[in-house]
Length: 289
Figure 1 (tube, rainbow, N blue to C red):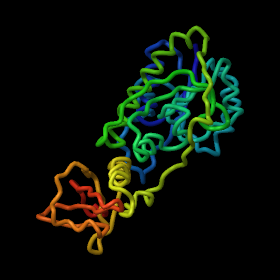
Figure 2 (figure 1 turned 180 degrees about the vertical axis):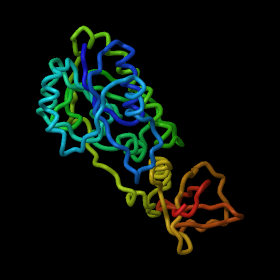
Figure 3 (figure 1 turned 90 degrees about the vertical axis):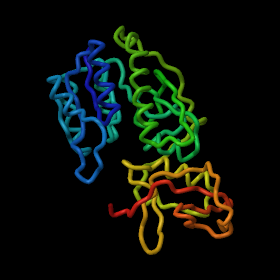
Figure 4 (figure 1 turned 90 degrees about the horizontal axis):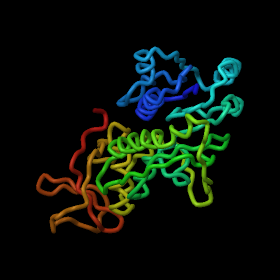
């Protein structure tokens, strides 16, 4: 079996390794050039390709359609997308002789779209996972080929959960590879009406709104904790990045629960929230650092 792989991030690295281990011939990898303005804390698909002597390219989104003749000539059995960030044109999907498959970081149909791990934590989910599905023009909408679930602990950050999802993605690939190698693609309906779609997130979305509930604030901090851009608030004329919070208490009796925002008592920092509940800020620092 031959494949062309669109890949980036840890999921891209780990799933590409799984394909290679299963004996699938990867004829070309399409990945991204790292953004110099982004905190690159994850594995490099390009580096893996160099190590494994696999041809790779890093086209811009507007250059993808120019790849169609090359992909048609390669005529891969499968086309895989593992955390590749651009939408892949339908003409490219059609180059796969058997199927074009995408790995998504949620339990579809929930949390279709961008930043699924971050959104799952923001919504207080206790579970998410990885889903391999048929690629269609509509994002994350094709039939489900395989899934694996992971738990989300009440204090886990997006980075910690993403590590679990990366492992689950490899589990899914290994589950379905025996069938794929035989040319069989297991599939079940992706019932979109039971799920949801979310767009991308910007650093500005990390601003803490103290009128929200304490649980919502805590979930925001977890969802965007470094190395993501982080949750932030203003305190004494300075923007502070809030890296870690706790809901556990006990909290001082001297806190004024009727006043939203930051209160400092005995060198401990607390946030008073809209439900008159408290989050303790365990770690914060000036945003410019």
